[in-house]
Image (cartoon, rainbow, N blue to C red; front, side, top):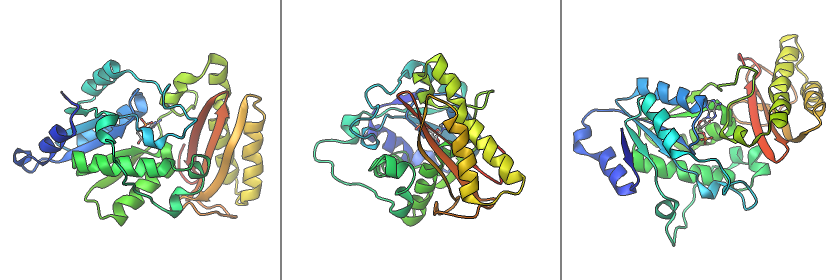
Length: 283
Ligand code: AMP
């Protein structure tokens, strides 16, 4: 396994003539890897000849008062996990090289970036789209894998890739959960043991909504009331948003169907967690 820090070096490898017909599969992450990231890497391994993982805590997707400085990092552990998942190249650029003095270009994916996390975290998806576009140009992947855990992010990246005719196949992967239902996230490391228990209200809310949907409930106001109710029972939980939206366009809906996505963002103490499910799909 090779570790590469320089953009030029990574790009040179990606476009080298000796790449021949070899397919590059790519998993971009912010590191502090867990089983969710590993599932993307294992799938990536089967879809390409050269598997590239990037570790980069992207400063431009964090708001001023967000957790950029304390975001968990452990490069050595990440590299061990990467090796075990069959990664060929770990790309770890520096922020100074990604965003040198004078940097001023950004990618904005308009409507789909606005609701949900885009409304609570203004500018977040511009930061995501910009870094992913840059990484695609550096790594030149044939296929890139993203988790449905970040549902809106995946929708934004799919839109950007289609709109800009980027020659990359985008693969969405299922959410990996702990055995008690909590969606795996690097940010779970922030939770105290009590908060970790409280955080289960997110997956409980998803289960409740799917139960009601399964029993025939289609009214979004009714589903919303029941879903919010589950979270509001948890005293440490503060709802950022709970929304039912069309799973493709993320537009508002009054009547749910099998493609409706329930998206949640909930603060447990200082930690903001997100989760989601598509009502017609298995959790
Ligand atoms: P992050 O390091 O949090 O930026 O995530 C990197 C990639 O891993 C993104 O495509 C995420 O959607 C994906 N990911 C994060 N958590 C999970 C999870 N629990 N299950 C599946 N994919 C995940």
